[in-house]
Length: 438
Ligand code: GAP
Image 1 (cartoon, rainbow, N blue to C red):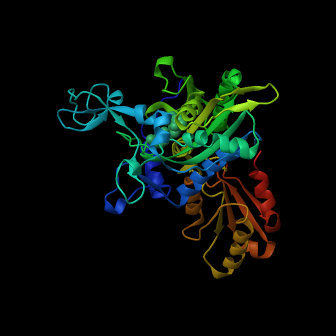
Image 2 (cartoon, rainbow, N blue to C red; image 1 turned 60 degrees about the vertical axis):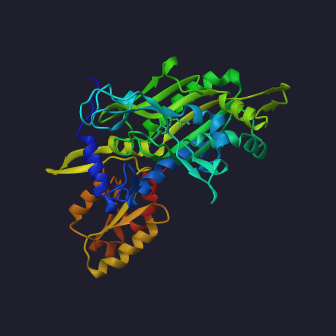
Image 3 (cartoon, protein in one colour; image 1 turned 120 degrees about the horizontal axis):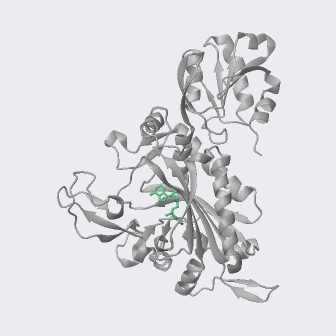
C-alpha cells in the first residue's frame, strides 16, 4: 500500500516547533516578517546536528573532499558568468481580480487567494537579492546575495586545487546561507527566502561523470535512510531532459513524502563543464586540470549533490513525529536519530530537594563534555519524561535518593521507555556505547 500524505502533520509539527523552541516566526513581536524564521534553543542544536552529520559524511569520512566557506556577497560578474543574472527567474503573474502575485507554474491557472482565473502576462522575475556594497550608489557598487553556495566552489577551483594538491576526482563542500527572493515562499521552512544549503561540487574526468553521478545519487539517498527517514517516504525522481536547469546534463531529485505529497528534498546534478567553462571565459583565468601522467589538459565535469539544511531538518522532524501510548497515556514522541536530537541526554533530579542537587550537578558535569545535555527539575518526573520525548531526547538520566548511597542513576530509553540502573562511574561509557558513530 503506498503511503498517503498526512495533512494534519504539518500543523502538528509547526505547533510543536514553536511551542518547544525549535522554530519561531521571525520578528514576531512586530507581527512577523513574511516567511522568515528564527531557530530557537532546540532548533539551533538540531540544525547544527543536521549540518554536522552532512559534514561528517561528505568531508570527515572521505579523503577526496575538502571544505570551503565562501563569501555570501558577490559581484555581478560572478552571477553574469554563472547564468543567474539572465536565467535564474520564475514566471511572475498578477491575479487581475485580487492583484496577488503568483508563480505561474505553481497555480494551475486558478488564483489560490480569490479563485480568479484571469492573470497578467507572465514576466521573468529574477530571484536574486540585489544590494549595494559601500557608501557610493551606482552600477559599480551593485552586489548580490548568493542564491546558491555552489559558485564559491567554482570561483575557488584553482586555489583549492593548488593549495591542497588534489586531482580529479575530488570535491569541495560548503554549508551556508543562500537567499532567493521566492515569489511564493510556503510550507513552513520548506521554501523560504533565506535558507541554508549543504552543497558539494565533485570534479571528475568527463568520461567518469555518469558513474559518479549514479554514485552520488545512491550515496545521498542512503544518508537520509541512515539518519532515520523511512524508505517508504523517500524516492528518487530523474528529471526529463526538457525540465533541466540551464547548466544541467542530468538531474535526479531525492524526494520526500511531505504532508502535501511528494516534493524535493535534494537535487543531484551532472553540471558538465558548464560552470568552469563559463567562469574561465568570463574571467580570462584558465580553470582546468593538467593530468601529468596522461599528458592531457581538460576541464573537469562537475557532479553536484545540493541539499537544503533547513529543508532537511524539516523532513527529519516530519518523519520523526509520532503519537503513541505509554502505560495507557498518550504521548508525542520525536523518534529522531540521536545524532540529530537537540539534546542527547536530559539529567532529571527526582525531586527539587537540596540534597539531590549536588549529585545531580555532578552527573551533569560528567556528561556535558560528551553530550548536549538538558537539566530539568520542574514538574513531576512523568511530565518531564513526556517533555523530553516530545523533543526527541533519546536518554533521560534520573537521579534519586538512592543515588546518594549507591552512586547509581536510572537511564531511561525514549523509544522503549525501558529503564536500567547504571553506576555514575560507568555512565559515560554506557551512554557512549549506545550513542557511538559508526
Ligand atoms: N546549486 C544547485 C542548487 O542550488 P537547488 O535545487 O535550487 O539547486 C538545492 O537547491 C537545495 O536547496 C534544494 O533541494 C532544497 O533542499 C534547498 N532549497 C532551494 N531553495 C530553497 C528555499 N527557497 N528554501 C529552502 N530550501 C531551499
